[in-house]
Image (cartoon, rainbow, N blue to C red; front, side, top):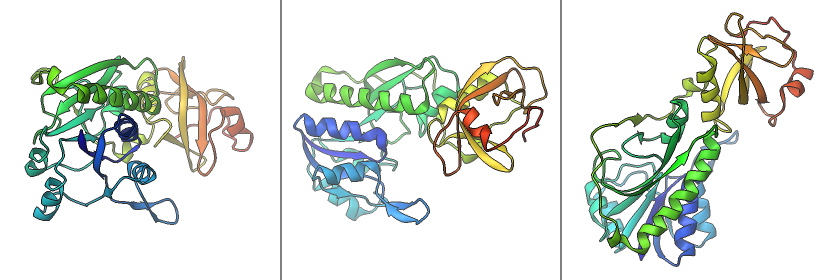
Length: 301
């Protein structure tokens, strides 16, 4: 098929690679514009942008698709279908209607649960046992379109990063399956029951609140590992907590219980197994404590 691909983050790259590998013609790749990143604030292309250029594909990164000029340029590509994976921009009706088969999305949840921007993080935070990928026809509503096919995945203690990688590969496989025989899949309307929304992650959600129960904190750690990373404050510095076990603990929340960096919470305690100081790589708690003393009995904020 002649395909317009629309995606921006790492999650979308396996789908782009799969389309190219399967021999589909990529008319253009749309992604978010380059943005300032890191200390030098140098403009950084999105992972999809970088991958598309490496593959020799034409890249477009408009800040919006609302103008008649952008919509005409999209329509002029004369695509059979637009494949969308975490693109990050709202698609106006003229864009949705332009390709012959419309716009088809790789969504990282089992719809209608976790419509929206951060379905993987929200599934882990909520303690869901399963998630998955849904291939869906796009319409004007937020992830409300008819479902074409879906496959479930067990969360089973995985981090947000691990789940993202797994669902990205699965999404690529499912999209190829649909593209091979699109007429074999009858669109199914999403049920009204079970709708939840996966709001974009706010920076304030990354800070660990020791008054919360240990199971909630452990899910918070997993959801944001390895990036952007849940964090706590110690010695006036932010420390990322990348992995932790739930253990018993009966002290006031935030109290350091031992020399293994075990921290009491509102119910139980967390024993970190992987931490990271600013500007340094991940390390074990004993490595952190050698040069960053936090005595037992310390009450963390």
